Length: 165
Image 1 (cartoon, rainbow, N blue to C red):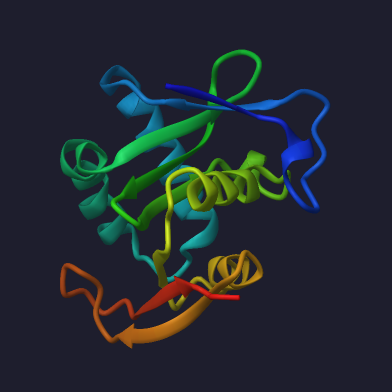
Image 2: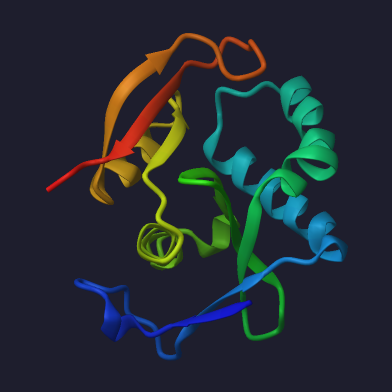
């Protein structure tokens, strides 16, 4: 399924010269998705040692991508700029290539996730304050905290929920 997001549908939209297309991801694109994931993690997850990046990389490729509804945004040449994975009402992953950050693509992903996919929750690494701030600006609030991540590693997780108005 392909979604064309016209920025006129959103309050305070990012400005693009052409509509941004959020489209599904096929398994043959998973290696490129993992490249975007790794570039994004290296740019934003400075708390992760190299050994943990190498630990997570095959899990992303071989397990995690299959467990979510996966969508991406590509540039004009077809290169993936970022991706998002949703399971039920939870945003499980959102990663942008470092060159695509700050251009409004993450905001469009979140607006699509909330408005079309009915996302209500997201878990965020506490040690990634940029992500925490982004989700707070997008209307999420911290509701609880776990000392360890889902694999028992010492990376505290902030559990966030979309604030009710």
